[in-house]
Length: 269
Length: 99
Image (cartoon, rainbow over all chains, first blue to last red; front, side):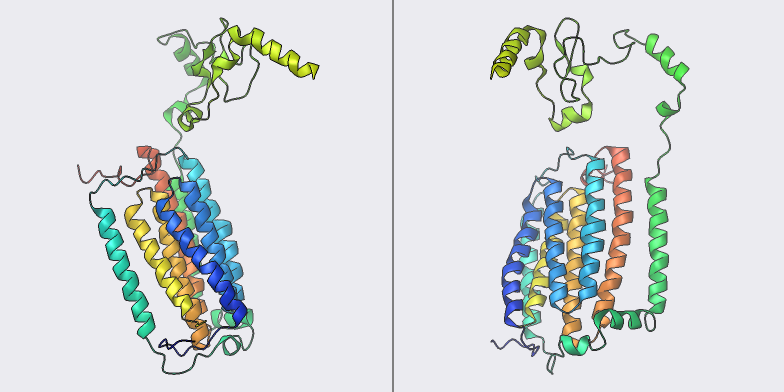
């Protein structure tokens, strides 16, 4: 096909077609990670790249690694990423503006240089012999071959890595464990005293509930106070920060006649 | 198609991951870019295993995956800790040493 320095042999046509379709999409997804604004979108693009790589592993005769890639990476690691994203808050503003001036042009220039360097290096490298191929590699079966290597030659590395995994799990538990805040340790009596002897009695009986005139009791709709006005206090701060709050004015008391008309129209149909 | 095309793809993905670590400011997205670099290296290992006709490359890729999993677990725990104390996952806000 061409005179690339690797005399590595050629892939079969189906594999080539698969590569020509999936590889550009993977590169586009990787570029997407650089530009998307929301971290969740970056996580989804990352999951796509990992699945693509799993397909490439299987195409390369690494069936075991392909399955492990799906189970460990797209299953566990990306799930963990999304979990932490939700924990840390999707609203955490991920600004794309650069705080260090000039980092972006430098990074892009340097990366183009590195990419050219790597590509030219690969194209110049020579194995000096023909590629062995999948049949030779998986002579005794892929899983069997990996198992026999793992439990003979690499058994020490295997043991060390299991120790590493346990250490990492314990370390993560120690790091992420938090002492209960002082507020959570207060007794009910102390809390109740603080409520009634605090600055204002406005919330002494608790934050406002949905209210008598409420037409919605969803968490994202502000509660109606006795005078019919919506109360901003009743909506969680997190929802406000995310911008997920529905405008309470629509459901205020003075809007009730129109709302009743609308309901009647709806029933009449 | 030449098998070495996989190596080109691996090199390109690695470079994009490196750029992402430098230009993104959200710690979690930076971690994802590190994962991308590790994955690209794994693809190169798997391709080399095929070229050389033995499974050693796949063994290294396997160990890389385990180490990457450890790294993610500890790294995300650190991010959660930083977030608890500073209320932000942006690496620009964790600049105590500069001030």
